[in-house]
Image (cartoon, rainbow, N blue to C red; front, side, top):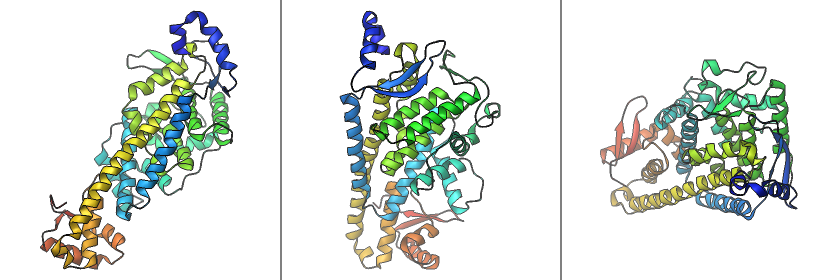
Length: 399
C-alpha cells in the first residue's frame, strides 16, 4: 500500500478496501498505530504467488540441506554446526552494532567446552544457540519467556543505561531513530500494553491455523520490532525466537542461517520496518514478508553452495589419503586421523584440533591418540603447535 499511495493516490482508498475485502486476505487481529498517527490498523497480507513460491523454495532448499548433510562424517558435522553458530552470532552482533570477531566467538566456544562453568563473553548466547542443535530450548508461551530469552541472548551486551526498569520489560518510551537521528517509530507503551501485545503475538505463533509457519515467523519478527519491549537487544532476541520456531519446522541449518543474509542486506532490512510502520501502508505486511522469506531462502542458498564446495574438497581429501602409499602401510587409525583433520580443515573456521577431541572421534584413549599423532608427526604428515592444549593439523598443502 505504501508504494501504491505514491503511484496512484486517487485510487488509494479504493485499493485498500479492495485488498481488505479480497477473498484470500489474511486478517491477523494484530493491531498497530503508526508513529504520530491516531489511526489504528489491523495487520494483514495477501498470499500472493510470490509469497507462496518463496515458501515452496524454502521447503525445497531445506530438503537439499538435509540431503547434503545426512551422510556427513561426525567431525565434519560437528565442525559445520559450530561454524554456522559462530557465523550466526557474528552476524546478529553486526546487525545490532555489537563489536565482536569470529575468532573471539570461536575462542569462547572452546572455553565453554573445556570448562562449562568458566565465565566468558557470549557464554549465555552460545549456550542458547547450541541448545537449538541439541533441542534443549522450549518455545515461549508467555511474555515472561521472552524476557528469559532476552536475558540469555542480549542482556550481557546491553549498556547499563539501557537495562530494563519494569517488572518484565521497559517502563519508559523508546524511540527508534535512523542514522541521521530521525525518529521513525515509537515502541508500545505502557508496560501493561507491552505484555498484552506480546501475549497476542505468542498466541498467534503457537495456535495452529492455515498460515504457513515460516510466514508466521516473518510476521512475528515484524510485530516484535513494532512492540519493541526492550530499550536495546530487540533484534537479537527476536532473531533467536525466529530460530526456535524455524527449528520446529525445518532442518537446523535453516533455523540458524537467518542473520547472515540480513547482515548482507541491512539497508533493505531497515527499510522493511520503516515502510511497514508507515501510516500510508495501513498495516499491509506483503513487502515485509516477501523480503523476510527471501532472507531465509538466501541464507539456505549460501549454505548449500558452501556445502557443495566443502564436500568436493572432502572427497578430494579422501582420495588423497586412499592413494597415499605410506599411509596405506600404516594402521586404519592413522588414516582416520588424517581424514578427521581434513574434515576439520574444510568444515570449521579452525584448522587445528586437540588430542582430547581426536580421542572422542577415534573412540580410543588419549595415550593411544597421542602415540598415533607422534608417529604421523615423525613422518611429516602433521604439524603440532602450542601447549596446554597442543594443537594438531595436517602439514601445509598436504590436501
